[in-house]
Image 1 (tube, rainbow, N blue to C red):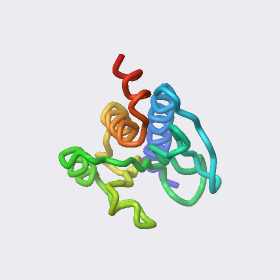
Image 2 (cartoon, rainbow, N blue to C red):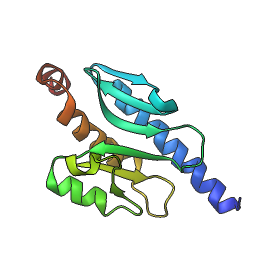
Image 3 (tube, rainbow, N blue to C red):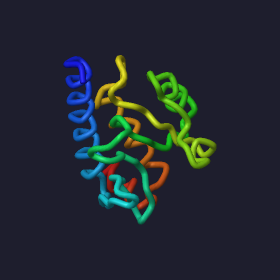
Length: 130
């Protein structure tokens, strides 16, 4: 692996970890590992897919973005695509983290919060806003 690729991968993993930590701070959030990949759930429903720590696929996240502007912004990220398994039709976007020009942790956390708000029960959203 070329040094630049190794550096990009390390940077992507650091961003992924910041996003994971943010997601786990949200009210009622829990981490699980179905299929050997990390997901964060609220009320037993996934609001962010974080993928595997290691493996063939490069680091990325998948979030549900109902707001048309946020969805369009996410789809404009380098390498972004509608999520597989039919999830893309419901607004889920897969965003790779190791691509040149990939979104930073702050923007990704905004998208994770929007995904959380799309999934979480109203009482937990009220707790987040309170």
